[in-house]
Every structure is written in C-alpha cells, then in structure tokens.
Length: 156
Image (cartoon, rainbow, N blue to C red; front, top):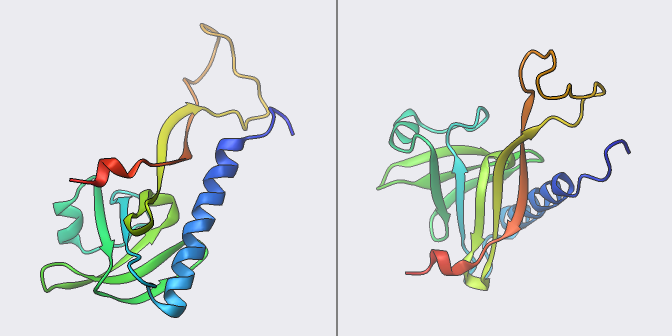
C-alpha cells in the first residue's frame, strides 16, 4: 500500500454504501414510522439528471425531502432515481451517491455530511517535483470525506 491507508476514501465509500442500503430498504418496504430524509446534492454533478427548470432554479445545490409523497424509487449501486413533487409538478430525478452533500434523517437524529476539498493527487507513481521544479502545473483531484452532522443546524 504505497502512501498508507486512505481512511478518508474508505469512510467515504462506507457511508455511500450505508445510504444505498437504507434507500434499498425503503424501495422494498417504504419508509417505516416517522423516518424521512433531507438529501442535499450537487446539481452540477455530471451524472445528476433533473429537469432544466430545476437546475436553473438551483444552480449549485438542492435539498429534496423524501417523506409523504415520493414515487418510483429505484436504487442502484451508483445512485437512485425517484419522482418527487415540486408544487404539484412531479419530476423524476437521478442522484448519484457521489453528488450527495448531506443525508439526514431527523426522526432519529442521524446525519452525514460529505466534505469536498482539493488535494494533490497522491495516486501517481511519479514523485511530485519540489517547489520551483519543472512541472505542467499542480495536479489536483477532488476527494470527499464523510462526517457525522449535528442536527442542530437543521432545527429552527
């Protein structure tokens, strides 16, 4: 394991897997009890699919609620598709897990937040040249880490 164990990416994959498992259960049996979800996602993610008017209205991120009215939930390994109601206008959305910024179930005070930050790409076999050395410029990649969210930020 050159460079060590990448716990951040391992945690990232585990938390996305948790969301997949939860949504797959909801697909099979529906939302149990008072459970409901606030899901914030990046509307500019290249794999997100939503109506043009929604991406125009929410050009950076959007929070959807899965609670009383949702239809046709289809969960895959990479994301989920669901039809939600936007002011009496049902719209079909595809949200890949990699686009999710927060996933909150306030009924049980559970939440995840996925932070995005840029770091140098440590996956190259070539060493990074020292400052001032010849280079095409910095090589950067986006990495995301997961963390548990305090639900106080969602309360009024």
